[in-house]
Image 1 (spheres, rainbow, N blue to C red):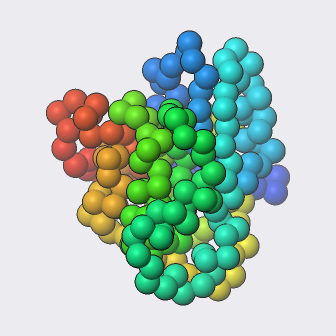
Image 2 (image 1 turned 30 degrees about the vertical axis):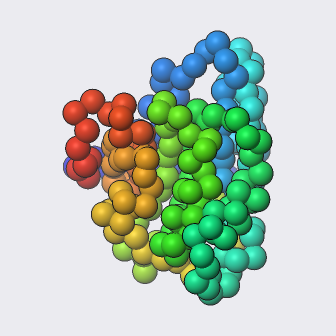
Length: 216
């Protein structure tokens, strides 16, 4: 069993990822790269894309959904159509945009199941079969620490404690996520530090010999 390690670095730490670099393989080079990053962009992430996009045009989208008021509320029952419209407004993506990479980080663990479904309904029009995604979760929600994540390089993430006091977290089992995140499937799952896991997501149709990914 392999576990990633984190390295202290100034006011944040570096979190080594075993699968993050796979997001950046085989991406289109002749068209603009389109990346969705949930949350505000930290300086490390800005620097990463400044370097990455030197040789290729990039369209970067940073909707800060973590700052939306509904996260600190009870997330009352809302119809699927209203949730879809809510997240469409928050994402604020123009029709016709097809994303290459989605960085979800730990956002799904701040959402009730129905809200995850609403988010994915809003996102689906902007996905294509080659879209890849990345998220972080935990098998034990009671011990899950939340961080503001960023990118240092293709093998290391930055993490700094996220100040979200009294914000509820919602546990999602592996089976729940597999169902909720369709059309994505978990192509790779790796254990990280502190009981966290990282997930590499891809469309089911492009995963050769698709089957549910084991935790390694």
